[in-house]
Image 1 (cartoon, rainbow, N blue to C red):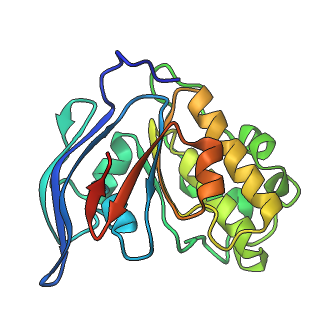
Image 2: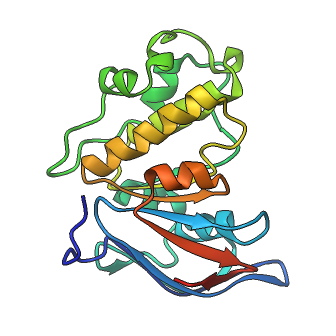
Length: 222
């Protein structure tokens, strides 16, 4: 787990973002340390998902600075940010429907990073037993919750140091929500940082070290 003296893995400074002419984020400042689970909490439209997209370089218009491992990644394309060690799990479960579970996992593969135990399908099947029971099932024949788990597992195949999770419990059966929560705690135990967007307060209470409350694109009580 993170220690108070650990330098931040991620620093967000003065983050502003727009969709077209509409500004949706207003000067966000926060950080995430190694092995820390930080939850962005707020209602629909508060700016949680937009914050994750901005960090991953997926917005056309933004201002501010984003530092990862003490270097600026502001303005980097998303593929370069991912290669640097940030994993992103979007809310909309983008699995390859024609590919099997194992084939989906292989698309996310990156080399192990220094000091990390690499993620393999075998390790991921221990973390997500449901996936282990269907390694040859095609993505299009899986339930929504199973697809969500596969998206997370595929992201972990990139051996990230920081995982951005967008609404991991949304639309997922309770038993799979428990597996998601166990997964987040496992990542924390292995020193991997997690920044998650979530409305389910019960899920947040079970996994987060710290909460950041968003309201209309601004942080409250941070």
